[in-house]
Length: 175
Image (cartoon, rainbow, N blue to C red; front, side, top):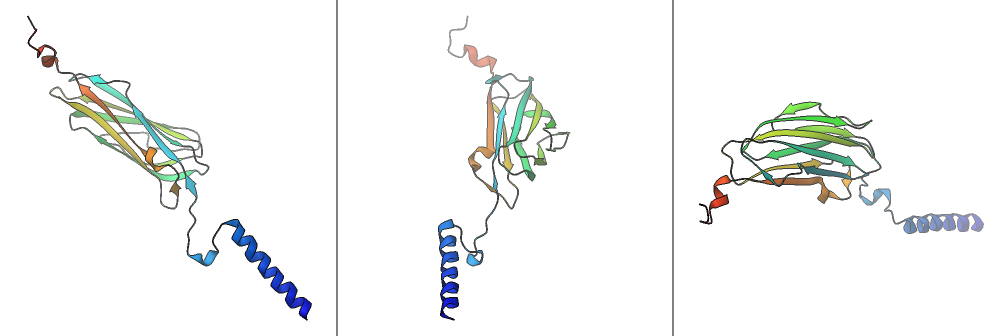
């Protein structure tokens, strides 16, 4: 009988020690483990200066470099008020999905395969009376139930200066 109790106690201690060394809390510790995700966005138009009335095309790419495919990544954009005629199209890599096209500010719930991507082309016209700057900002929100390992790369902004022909001679040296 003593041998059985000794073996039972030894087995319980061994399991407890193995659990403690694993670094993972026991299921009843109240800690929820979420699977990892790693979404990132890039945005650019290759320009620094635009002119009033000019058509501009931005390329927006949402990447999933994580090990898990993700359903329901919410992609949203904010556009300068001095942009008009905004349209967008989307293409996705195999296993990923997005809405094929739309107009105005982009709001799309996408699915991205592990190591997959979704790319948008955003076309807009700079207003004829625009001045200052035009910008497009984007964010991609990881769906509930996942923890993004690098959330700082889920946002991007591209800003261009609007060319002002009046300022070129504003220094008083014009003829």
